[in-house]
Every structure is written in structure tokens, then in C-alpha cells.
Length: 298
Image 1: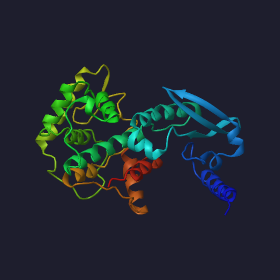
Image 2: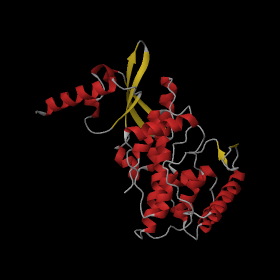
Image 3: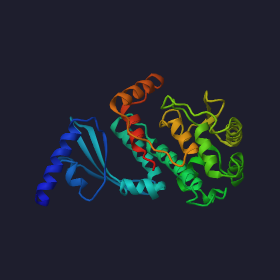
Image 4: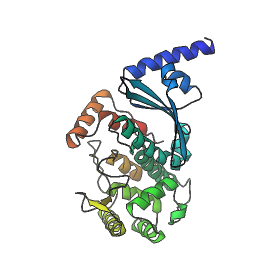
């Protein structure tokens, strides 16, 4: 095929895929994305938006004088966002909030931010445990920027608080971050096999008490029913925007040298979604599946 024929083929296939799905917000990634995903009419509705110093180019698909779909050019490739542009990835949260407002669409906006946090924590502990990296000095300036934002929102805003977290896990800050994730869990277990005793109850209690202590200084908080732990209304783990974190995934990272999250077959997916939606009726199947299939640890 000639280049033009290739583009026409992929464009037609992409248009058909979009029309058959309930996609409202589409991130464009790659050199030829604009030639493939939006239609010629969509490209006429072109706008530039600046949010917190990040410049976005986007296109609107209108139907009956209303916004049907929004195409947004990603600031960089999604792979780079995931691997080394955490601060930009975090700012995409604001983009999704904006899109949610202008399109009157209910979105769970921090799924990417939450998934990135989980990936960084587990990969960091796996690298340290496997001696691929040296232990992390317990100071905020040494923490990955994305994780630092997460820590500060939870109340860990001083080096002393970070050092106390490391002390809870025998001096390992990365393991402390992993246990902190465990303390914050909201999701039901993802498998029938329960791993008991991987993290000692004493360590869990130390981190839980530390979290409650550092959050006393937060200006505005909401109480939850999670063992008295207070969660700031603007944190990554708010009740509205929390992405599901499989408890067994974290236990596997502690117990073994790595963690792998594989796609479930359709029957298991269906059962998992049913369990989630019984506990959280507001959670959408698309949100849960996108998160669960979006993490691959090796």
C-alpha cells in the first residue's frame, strides 16, 4: 500500500471504532494521529488551551449544537508520560476536569495519577529489593516528583515526616511507601488466595498511626470509615476519584521480586466488575477496566 492508502485505511477503521464506542475524550498520540482519528469536519473546530502552563491543542466534534466528542493532542507520547514526565501527567488531571465541565460528562479524573503512583511505588520497591538501586535517603528532595505530590497531599510535607515513615519499615522509605498504599486501600481483594502476614500487623499499625498524626496539620479534611484514617478532600485517594488498587498486587510486590498484572478473561472481568459495582454503584465498567488493564509490571 502507498502511504496515502495506509492512512485512508487506518482512518476509516478508527472512525468506525470511535462511532461504535461511547468515547467522549480521545487523546491523540503520534505524528499522524490528527490525520487518522478526527474527521475533516472535526479539524475545522480547532482550539488552543493553556492550563497551568501546559498548552493543549484540541478539536471538537459537534452534533445538534452540542459537544459530542473532544480530541486532545497529548503533550507528549503516552509512554513518555508514564515513564519520565510525571509532573506533566499529573497536570492532565486538570485537562480532564476542564473537559468534564465543558462537555457535561462525569469523569473520574485522577485515574491516571493514581495508577502512575501505584506503578512508581511498586517498581521502586522491586528495584531496591533486587539491589538494582541503592536505598532512598528519606528526604523529600530525593523522592520522585509525582510521589512527592502524593505524599504532600497526604500530609507528609516535612523531611521529618518522611524519615518517620522510613523508620516504620526498618529504614526503607520505598517499603514505607508500599505499606502506605496498603493502609490507603479501598478496593476489594482481586483473588481468592489471601496472603496473610506478608506485612506485619505492627508495621501496618505504625504507618496507620503516623498517617493520622501527619494529617492533623492538614487545613481541610474529611473523615472516612477506613480505620479512622483521615483523607484530605483534594488528595489522590478521595472517595470520588480513587482508582481501584488490587491488594494482592501489593502483597505480591512485597512477597516476591516483582508483580505482574495480567488481563483477565471475559468471565473473570465480568464478575470483577459486578463485585465492584455492587460496592460502588457510581464506578463505571470503562473506568475499572481501563485501570486494571493499564498497569503492566515486569
